[in-house]
Amino acid sequence: MIDWIKLSTRMFEDEKIRIILSMPDGAIKLLIWLRLLTQAGKVNDYGFIYLNEDIPYTNEMLGVVFDRTVEEISEALQTLSELKMIEVSDNNIIRICNWEKYQNVEGMKRAKEMNNARVKKYREKKKLEEDEGNGNKEESIDKNCNYGCNDDCNGNVMNEKETKEKNEEIKNENLVEEKEEKKNSDDLLKKLKGFGINTKGLSVSVIKKLLDVHEERYVLLAAIKAIEKNKHDMNYVKGILKNWTKNGYPEEELGISSDGCIEISKEKPKLRFNNFEARKYDYDDLEKKLLGWE
Image 1 (cartoon, one colour):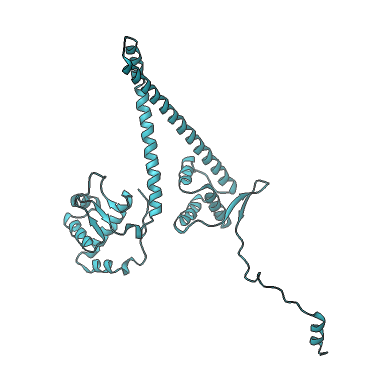
Image 2: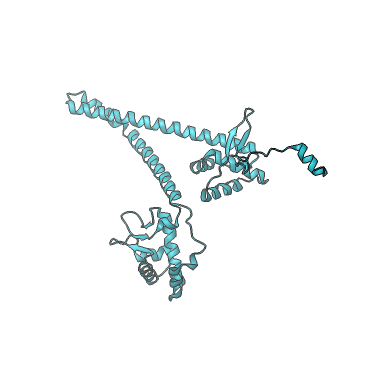
């Protein structure tokens, strides 16, 4: 899921929007269109709208979610479909047409990748817990194998041992990764406090979420920009980062000086006149002309 979608300030000048508003119950149809856009953002699957990949929304379900009657939903979907603003597949899955044109696709892709990574990590953790819960089963297999078990039994024991070792390795890697993330978050928290940012009530988990989206150098640069404006609130720093996410990050680079201070470097613009040669003058001749001697 993503937290926001982009809407053009010239949206109401669009011909299709004006046509919708001219219809009976046009305002309701437009509201349903906006609700569909936000629902597509929640699903975060390139404009598709569904409850899950196997269950599409029915008109009745959308009526409940959007707090509208089934008739209003049906009429709105028909109008939007006729205007080529949405497509409805044979299995009733809705897709917003030209979704990439209007929305922040890169931001959505990044959010989806981060969500997939979190889901993968959660599944690995659950698998480890299940494998540890089945640890006693391995001991019983060992005992059974001692009583004339065949080679297949021995092979099963080896496979389970290998699986357990692999799971232990994954578990250790996750612990190292979590420890490193916590250390990075702690370090950034100290740096922000050193800059003069009010970090009261700011937890390590909040900093970690910030680092999931922005590089540390941009967080520090945003803090410096805030201090320059005499703003010491972390919310102001977050606001700067949010603007950079939408409009692009600045070209300034952060560096560490020999005395440990933060330095900001910016490429100096080239002078427009540095390619011209200086004129050569005969100063004696100029003096005579100025004094009227020639």
